[in-house]
Image (tube, rainbow, N blue to C red; front, side, top):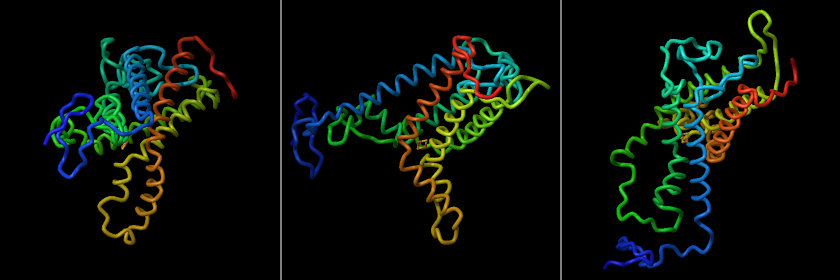
Length: 276
Ligand code: FES
């Protein structure tokens, strides 16, 4: 037997499932979370894309604030002082982002993230749009075929993102130095706090990753034989329970950090100095 939903979408009922003709029986505003997710993710993608290609206002020379969207800055086109790891790459034309080495991997890390997958599958592909709401697609093939099978590479992007988070941490520590050369001293400004909060958020997001949890506690047959790994796995599991929260917080801190640095670097505002 076949049925037609009230939306007009042809959908044969799955074997053993009730023949419900409405798209959903939910009475609540189930469309609100996918809508909010779509707006939040779209805002981040648009902002990150524009800023990555902007090519200026990414570094405050006096206080060594480097935007996370430009780290590591390895091209000869970078401001020399912003290249904390040298300029091993040649000059880039303006249409290549200065952090081309890290950005594709960070993007892949977020795109393949288990939480973001749920989020954008619902928000953009309506697959399904929400729990107990029928999706418009006639067939479900999951992540077993190209291109979605590539989602399984998430663990490898996790390894790279882990290294990049270490680099972001280094950038944050360097920024506690104010001035250059022999005149450099310890300094503390609002920019340092912004960078610090961002790095904490990035670590919470990275360490709460499902792949990180698997790296520490996966493939173990007996936790009792690996007490250190078991302890780490237990702690990371606590973080993992809040992965969605950290995913959104880290998006917010990335935008806030880059925006603050862009405003200070362009001279639009001054850094609020606390020390030196
Ligand atoms: Fe979200 Fe790995 S599951 S970053």
